[in-house]
Image 1 (cartoon, one colour):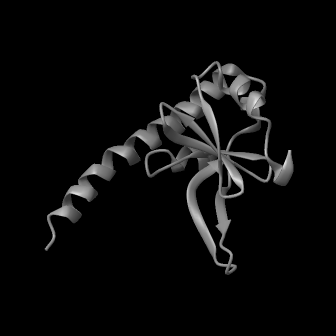
Image 2 (image 1 turned 90 degrees about the vertical axis):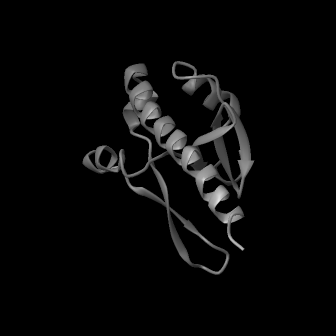
Length: 124
């Protein structure tokens, strides 16, 4: 697949033990969605899982690097996604554990968004 994208059918099969997912093209990569919420992404053929303050320590303890996006202007922008552990490709329990961390981070991020939107609407 072009640009280091992964076959969507491969991704659906890989995440099947965790949840039914869909795959969307995004910014030259792919977004991995569950129930319409992105919890993972693919860039350069590498899968990254969503992380946050609650899960960063677990990802860091495994030495899983942070996803850094490079803008068209060349600026480096760290994102709240970490490389998926290699064990997830061969071990369903590992996949369920790490994808579960990512799903939790995605849910927490989504829960924070309405509060921000409501606060912005209340401003003059």
